[in-house]
Length: 514
Image 1 (spheres, rainbow, N blue to C red):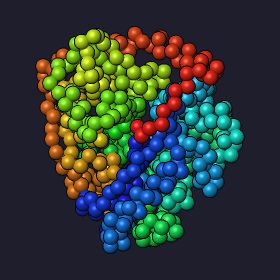
Image 2: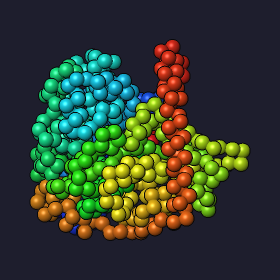
Image 3: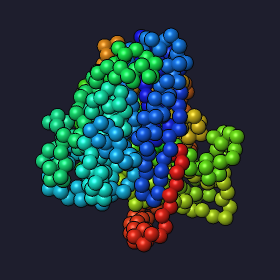
Image 4: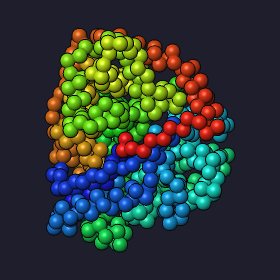
């Protein structure tokens, strides 16, 4: 029996076929275009659909007769990538991605909405522009025709699952991005009514591991696997990756770094942060919770660096490693704030942007490379500092995602955090996690931990260097001080840009594979 995992990230879309013993039978990936301006980040859902079919067909052809044994398919994508669709599931505009910050004003309005106060108190979840409700509010205000024509407002995974099964559904953790209230098992109707929205336009919620239904027969025939194949609901990529790294015990943390970085710590405390700096979501195991959150860029900052300094290199990532090697922490006092698209956890500032601090005439490209990689590490440390404030047990970190291929980044994170960082032989932990959730739901495994032993093995452990850690302690304090000192300037910059845009000035647009 085989399972297909369709994994849509912010940079590419891939399909991986697994046997139930964890053997990878075939895989294929294609890049996805991203359209970026000052605060807007979009992708084309029609491109998602077209390339999803392409990668699945490629994999089933490569599987040969093994494709006849595909019993299950599951989908995992980035969270909070909003797609308005008509009743037939056709997208009515580009998707507004999770890292898009245009709904900052709507997020502030939602915070002060009377009906939002009890929801916020009950869930501990703040309003921020990355979430779905502020995005829908922005659509209602700025594109009323699209809003009025929308039958559903979906996340990327919900969109793909509909085109596989014909059902508009989501899982509880994705539903939380709409301020779904877990304790009630319902969307907040009073809040939605006050905003001119209807919960009937949001996908129905079912537990992760639920079989949504069979793949539409026409789709199965087109893609080359049996019509008996069932689609099983997983969850969004950051949480699937927690399962895929084997983080099932209290005190284990996961750093998933693709385009963005997601950091989650397994705890038995359903804690509430009064400052609302972190998210706390249910883990796959009952009685366990995941505390942490995501930054707006992790590997995406490295991609920016690659295009800036290594665009024409044959081995850009190898050259990035070489440039970073052999340098002291924060060489010459150079610090980089990696907030190229604003920042989410833990500072939640849509207006902040990237900054090199301490740059002098002696600094060259090698020091800039080092500072960017260290800035990524500091952004993770920032989340860890908040978690440590709750006296949570934190024993080890497992790193996964594409950024783990840079050994220097893994070592930097160990040195900056002062905690061992381990990597796995298969860095496709998001797809592995989604497969484990689906196979457990389908009754193949009693729990994901049973399946994990078949799918993954530890590859390497990066031990922190105590001397470097002590130096990074001081530089991290300076990193935080630099950010705090710039808060007012960030707000002034955002206001200035807004005024200029009203006059049609300074509209910077970029199309690239981030």
